[in-house]
Each structure stands twice: as structure tokens, then as C-alpha cells.
Picture 1 (cartoon, one colour):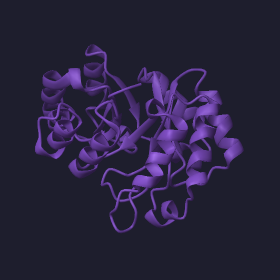
Picture 2 (cartoon, helix red, strand yellow):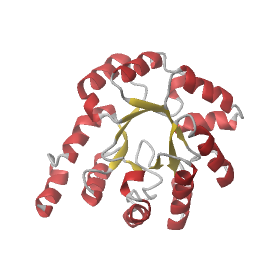
Picture 3 (tube, helix red, strand yellow):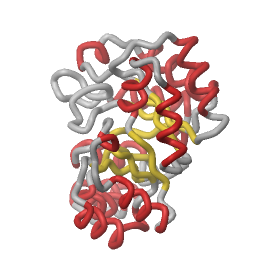
Length: 240
């Protein structure tokens, strides 16, 4: 998968949500209903219908999976996926502890019915900073071997954890190691802020998959990909 724009809906009112989707649907590859928001969003069904009309794939946030896992009620989670006609799902263990063996089995089971996106990294900056490059590789490879379509590298919706250290610096050597080992197409980098988006585009090229993009940033991100902003223009000129 290349040039994927993974958009996060943080419970935007439907009228605004519809305006963005109607205007910029061609730039939306996947939309995530953030966290467990779909349980409390009164306009969720209308949003899902709109996305289906535009043939935009969508998924609940990984935190919703962890919520039902912690309650030992994945049957209810599956029912929600079925009732709302989700074809894809995000699984994660960034907050709730799940062993490697169990997580592997869960991905395998869900991948028989859904396209699985597996998130790697912790919500806690402290815990993510304790992960060695081999820890990242092992966790990513486990997900892919279990049947995940793609791995999502954690950065949260704020760009302050996972692939970003506690000082706010992107872990560039780690990311280059992951790409050289796993391949660019199997990785989705959470990059909610412009500085991260520009850095990753300049580092890996315009085909890089970027996630946790706000609705408001859909067109600005596309401009970065097209080298139409100063943040990525110079890289284009230098490589010409």
C-alpha cells in the first residue's frame, strides 16, 4: 500500500464531517473513528453511510478493541463491527497488556473476517522509549506474520509518543531501520502534525503512508505530498 492518507475523526459534527468528505474524498484512503468515540457519537451511523457511499474504508480506533478486550467481551466488539458493516479493524495493545502469543492469535482470528491494521508502540512515551529497535521489529513482524495488512507505528493523535521520544524528537534512525527491514509499503506512520508529515515525506518520499491526519489537514497534507509547500519543496528541487 502506498501514499495512504489515514484520517482520524475526533467526533466532528456531521455537517462539518460531510463537507470535508464530500470535498476531499479522493485524498482519503482510510478513516478511523478515534478512540472509542463511535460508542457515544450520535451521528456515527450517518458518517458511516457517507463513507460507504464514497467507498472510503473505515475502522474503529484501536482503543475500542482494547476496551472490549479488557472487559473480556470481544463478542460484543465483533457485533459492533458487523452491525456497522466494518470491513477493516484496528487492533492494538498500547494501553492494555496482551501477550505476544495471544495478540498473534487475535490478529489471526480477526484477519479471517476483516482487513487488520495492527498498531505497534505504547501510548506512554516512557514505555515506548524503553523499546529497543529489535523490540519494534519483533512486534511489527509478529503482526504481519499473524495476518495484519499493515502495521501502524504509534505517535498518538498529538505526536508525543511511540516514534517520537519524550523530548519531542522523531526517532529517525529507528524508522529507517524499520523501513529497511519491513519495507515502506507495510508501514503506516502516525503523523498528526505538519512537522512530522514533512519530515517523513522528505525522508521516505511522497509514497509514504501517513496516519492520524485531521480532517482539516487533508488538503494541506496533499500539498506536502505534491511538493507544493516550502517544507517539502526544497527536497524536490535537490532530487530533481
